[in-house]
Amino acid sequence: MKTATPAMARAINDRLALDLLLERGPLTAPQLRTLTGLSRPTVSDLIERLMVAGLIEVTGEYGEDRRGPNARLYGLVADRAHVAGVDLRRSAVNVTVADITGEVVGKATRAIDDSASPGTLAALIVDAVTAAAGKRVLETVVIGAPGLVDPRDGELISGEGEVPGWRRGVVGSVRQRLGLPVVLENEVNLAAIAELRKGAARGSEDFVLLWLDDGVGAAVVLGGRLRRGASGGAGEIGFLDISGVPYCDLVEARVLRGLGRSEVVHRIAKGAFAFATLLDPGLVVLGGKTGHEGGDELAALVSERLRELAPAPTEVRASTVEGNAVLQGAVLTALDLTRDRVFG
Image 1 (tube, rainbow, N blue to C red):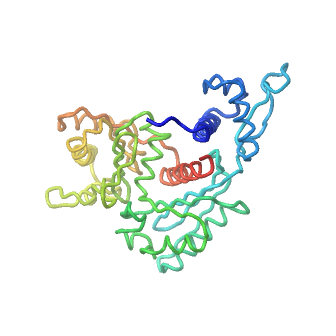
Image 2: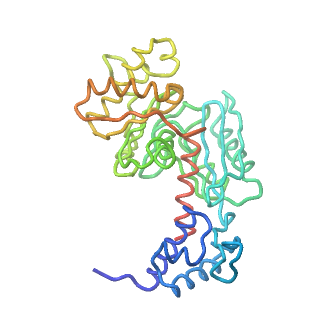
Image 3: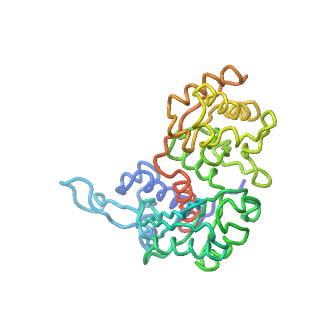
């Protein structure tokens, strides 16, 4: 086994310190020493390197009665980099821009006309991203949209027509017009990232997000990692045949609105049952409009029904991500990519 080179050890220590500052906010040098277990000279060198690189800065002092180097609070330079998350809906493009700490600094929305062409849609996305960014320079843009995305090349496989003008090649056009990295991801996969990091699945390594809205789908997270499948089709439960009817036609929000509570629970439990028997994730999160509106009461009823069906114990929870889960997942994904590039 090879030992780390001095350069590699410095890079590891730098990233450790940066992640601590992300998680805990501004810290003093003594606090960094305590949390990292590194020596005083190592932390001093680390702080100097990160300040020269423009990654951290002095943000204040710790304690009213203390003075000197040990009292200085060091924090991340928030505007060192910015990212954009995009949620592409049938009727609108929603964009959120955040700084490298995750603080939201800009938003924009643009309506999509039913007659939009691929070129018009690409221009609309670029306009919304540019408006949300203002004068800020972006590092990464992540777009969440309906359809299958090939994990090998990041291109759209299916889902054309679900948004006016949405075709293979639109993301490439957006990338060319913006002149920066633009990543496409399935919308439900991004919602699952939001649930994993800040929602109902926080602290869970394995879970399935069952997305119940005007569109139906699922996302699979195993071992703390999103699983897309060989061709990006993991979790596409909407295509599952239930007694001759596609599952999406049984549980779309507009369909469930006309049913009694018992039938709604029964139908949702069938989808959860499929994942419980095949993957044994231990947790199913009910997301989308139906999951949010049903809340804990619906989750408890589906859990009770699932216990009657599934051989493996499976907890059911309602989504707890407030606001647009797809958009938040897009921002979180863009931040991960950008931090790896900027922080090393």
